[in-house]
Length: 344
Image 1 (cartoon, rainbow, N blue to C red):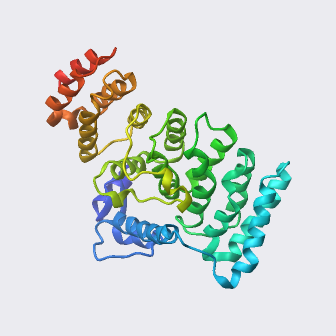
Image 2 (cartoon, rainbow, N blue to C red; image 1 turned 90 degrees about the vertical axis):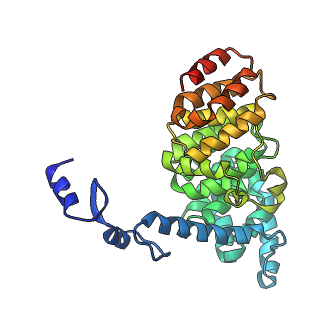
Image 3 (tube, rainbow, N blue to C red; image 1 turned 60 degrees about the horizontal axis):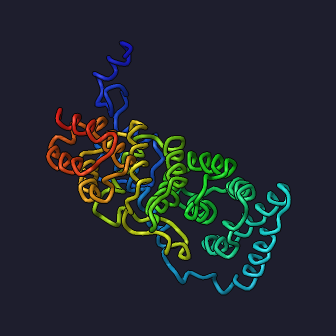
């Protein structure tokens, strides 16, 4: 740290030792709408602000019988059905661009009914090239909050495609999704990553690859750490997500443990994401519950080896439980895991 910065830090009640800025100064610079009585933890304000906004989005999406207002239904429904028909017959990029502009205009005019309009148009039925163009066009000129319109775009275009993915995602859709998630990280968490990981059949290899790329290329490791804590905590409300009601049947409320899910956790750990103690505790619980079923799974054991290497200090209280679980496995890395555990 340069001398002038060190001196400034000593003379002020700074937020961080390396940032000579007081909490009051930071509060004035950060645009927040939520405030509270505790000025010692600015991050609380940010989280509360995001949570309030998320609750508003969930309120809208959770209503299964959410319908268009009668005053605009007569005009909007025929237009939405016409756009849906055109969507399935697009033959060029220019047509996709023009259609995207019309969809955006119709959603803007419908305001709070925009999600229902998207549901009527069914944009997820478009091919991947058209879907990528739609994401770009629907993003243009939209002045919306973090969890409003961006969540609608993700849950109506991208999520339905990835939920049924059984082969590697197309490059064009993957690249556009990564760019969009990087710009709207909180929406990516609630309207794409959470429902994907909670897929009721469990994630497969293609979906694991999609989630891994989004996490690595779009999210900050600190954000991923908090996201993992939500995934593993016992509070189901922490895993609330955004999706259209017609796709709700494809998503579970609990994690469905598969080989690919263990591979995903290994990928997250290899991305240098630091898990909290309670997250590690929950992982150990699921390892113990899954050991018999995945006793011959190399992916399961590779994850175990990675966990021991990355989170050794947090695993000491669970040494005996983990050792018993690993002893039930029979793979190429079983002995290596036991050797690592013996050194805890």
